[in-house]
Image 1 (tube, one colour):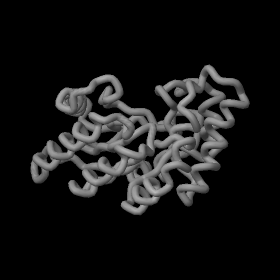
Image 2 (tube, helix red, strand yellow; image 1 turned 120 degrees about the horizontal axis):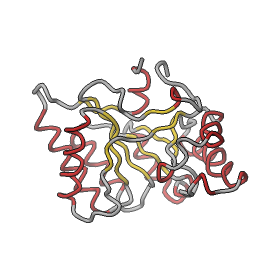
Image 3 (spheres, helix red, strand yellow; image 1 turned 90 degrees about the vertical axis):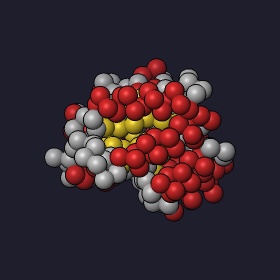
Image 4 (cartoon, rainbow, N blue to C red; image 1 turned 180 degrees about the vertical axis):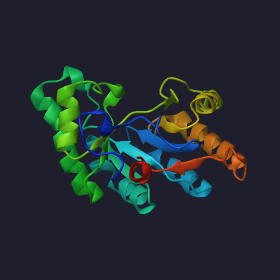
Amino acid sequence: LAGVRPSPGKDGNITGNTFPTNTWALTYDDGPHEKYTLPILANLQRYGKKATFFWLAQNLEPNRAVVEKVKGAGMALANHSYSHANLPKVSAEALRREIATSTQVQARIYGYRPAFFRCPYGAGLNVARIRQMIADQGMIHVFWNVDSLDWQDKSPASIHARVKKQMLAEKKGVVLFHDIQPPTLEASRLLMEYSRGLDGTRNAIRWVTLPQIARELP
């Protein structure tokens, strides 16, 4: 990873704001989910897109087949903690479980150590002990600048409209979805369809995984 590196400082955090114009990372949190993850994957494959999945360690063992299919499709797999705890509020021992133990579990099941970590709720970005532990595990923290709010909005059309509006304003960055929410399947498909409509124009969207873009950032 040339442009960014594991660090508790600014160079160890990706927000998407420094991406090249029209470059976007599509990300999904909280899975893998036994019902929704694979249909989301099918849409990604149908539209020829790659995404990064930030998963909870506690969900991996019950969904090993899902993990293997997503990994086999060339998607990037990352760490979203062990159990989705609010990291600034947990004990030192619990924090180790959420960051260090989760990384060990994911390395075993993914077949490689995750290189990226996203704090649940985005909480902990500016907490030194949290960022240091993430860096000590060899991971770069990832935030977002487009929030679908798919966990509270039940309308795929509304979610898509919200994402599109933010993308038009931000012009580049990281889109946050959740692969455990029913509306996300159609909402993110609508986004892929919208993106396909821009192909060949000056506003064409380039979708990247986080490992891809991290190698490119200056």
